[in-house]
View 1 (cartoon, helix red, strand yellow):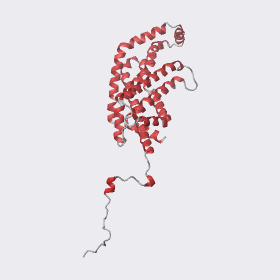
View 2 (cartoon, one colour; view 1 turned 30 degrees about the horizontal axis):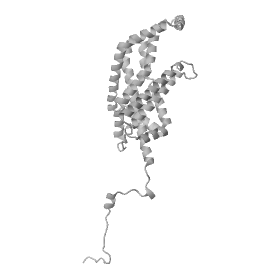
View 3 (cartoon, one colour; view 1 turned 90 degrees about the horizontal axis):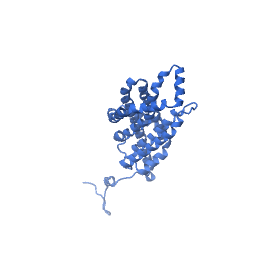
View 4 (cartoon, helix red, strand yellow; view 1 turned 90 degrees about the vertical axis):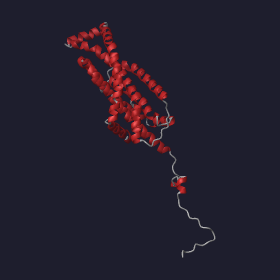
Length: 303
């Protein structure tokens, strides 16, 4: 638990580092360019398609009449945008995290290693391509999990509905898989990485779940764009930047935790000195002064 909390506070402090704040702008620029491009060409088409599907549904006609009876007919105009936003939010979260993983995490790992773990040997147990395949494979599994869990999101469950539990769990598992792997890729060997994953699986999953819950906060900013359409464009980069900062914090948290865990693992596996005698190098032995007296002679006092 001490390692869990210690790495948490260190990551929080590092988020205020000027270099971290500056680096967080790169994923923001890339994501904003991507989503402005997609939004310009696909936003209206997606909303119109969803609205046409809702209008053709007999079940939705019952919902519309119920809203009319409650004098909430105006909500019909925001249903389609909300559906599009809620459907694209998991994609935005995953793409934001992958963007941070490939553009920001290497720099953050280097920053933490240089400032705190300068003496930690780099075993280089994973290549760039192995890390890429690991991240893409984990993302694919998370997307499959999200798609399968969508029908359960609206099932009423006391006291917490599944929509508040399942997405953070899936995003947390993805964060654990990707960010912990990236934190150890440069410094740990393959065997050391597997051992750390085995020993620290529970706290790493807890870190992933907590960061998954935190990553849900920007969705409030993102979703509010549907209620106040005039503010949707300025809210878009704000929400993406918050996602970037959240995942930068997550990357720092996993980096501090994993590198410290690797340091402790190597300290435990290092051979202990025999009989309490420390190893002495050849240079140290040669520096010990010695006296050589020929046998069979006696030293005479100086005159």
